[in-house]
Length: 93
Image (cartoon, rainbow, N blue to C red; front, side):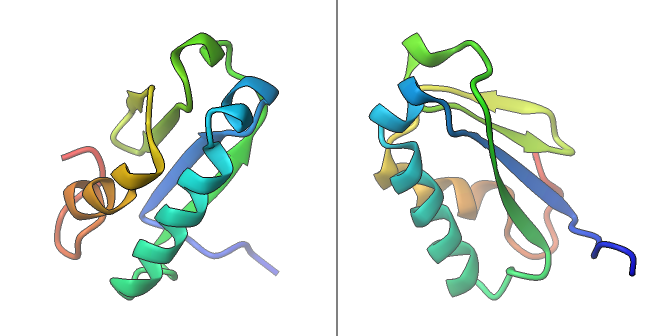
């Protein structure tokens, strides 16, 4: 069976340094906000391994937009959701 298509994939670092910088809380906040907006079938959160930016705090890529964010805090989840994943907007806009 083919994997479902998501219009946006959010790659969140799950390495040791980012985990210490609350990456799991960032992912939980994003997941909650995406569900609240009814976008669970459109936006997927993917935990990745270390990407080498651990000194800069939790980082994530917003694809297909290609924007990389670092020093992300859990309370920023709602803002990211509104900015990038609202219906009718392309990711990375």
